[in-house]
Length: 142
Ligand SMILES: [Zn+2]
Image 1 (cartoon, rainbow, N blue to C red):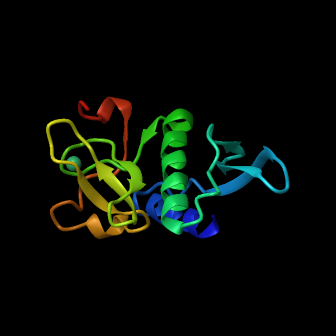
Image 2: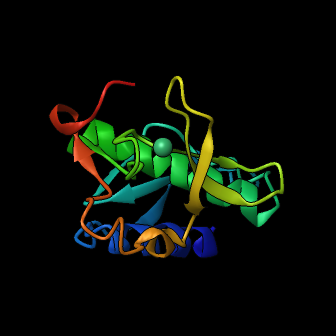
């Protein structure tokens, strides 16, 4: 869980959202089966993390997805966005078993932006200027 939070925090820092500091909250459950949520600014995301996903990739993708969903609900921020398609990219586990950000824009072959924690790697010269997060008004059609 802590390693997953670190990876997702790296991506927040990369895109310029370092003001959001992730931590986690135990929001309920029992000692044996705690309900754990991603939190920042004293507010936590609406869905809890599946800690039964014992592999790091599964937990990381879950943390990244809850963080991204929480950003929309709490901050109105869509992150990360695909620099090629201006489309919100969602977190998931790739066929190869890694936690990744993927662009699933309609009419475009789904493609991986970067592994979660490695968004800085897509800051190529061509993409350096494109912001990696948007508010709803700046987002392209799905
Ligand atoms: Zn794309």
